[in-house]
Length: 136
Length: 101
Image 1 (cartoon, chains in turn red, green):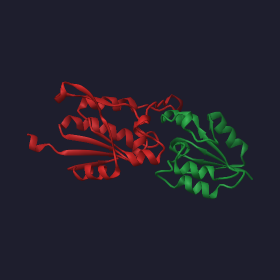
Image 2 (tube, helix red, strand yellow; image 1 turned 180 degrees about the vertical axis):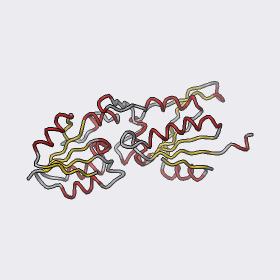
Image 3 (cartoon, one colour; image 1 turned 90 degrees about the vertical axis):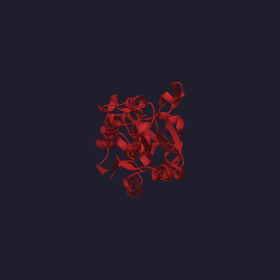
Image 4 (cartoon, chains in turn orange, blue; image 1 turned 135 degrees about the horizontal axis):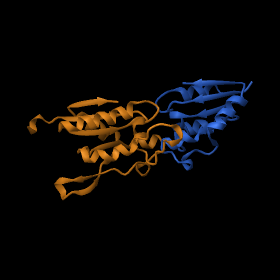
């Protein structure tokens, strides 16, 4: 079966709340997690805003879906690539993002960071390596 | 004639903020809300453009900052954080509202 596993990447380029793209992406990722593929998520351009910590939507009467990103690790979605340049252009750094972790079953269930900050050049290489891209 | 300009799109995705800044005259006001609030985060190309704009009052909607996890200390100097009531006041005080959607 292992030769049937493809590398799926979900490309997130939109801010949350202003449009439905971010939430839709998250829902498709969770649905797709049932299919045992090699899944990774890319956050670039305004997509980096999706992972900003401390989101509180009580004042705008919308659902705060940011806690759902914490669940990705339990669905074996453990590779969240965040582009360094996109963060910096927006006045953000890794410290502004939610801490997201997973338990590595191949390493005695050690808790590891899911977010991997990569350069634009590294992101291009990671994208090149994928079999299927889903764009949001 | 005073105008309240509103911007609700991210300056990093759409040109709404750039256009607004190009047309907003001294004595007018600019309110950033929804995804427009990302233009208020300090240390970006957008806040440099805002700082260079003399005679224009800049506002950002607090509830939209909170929704997106942007704390008040990340808002650039010279931009006033306002609530919905102040949004309404600004709309009423100015002669017209021009939305940059």
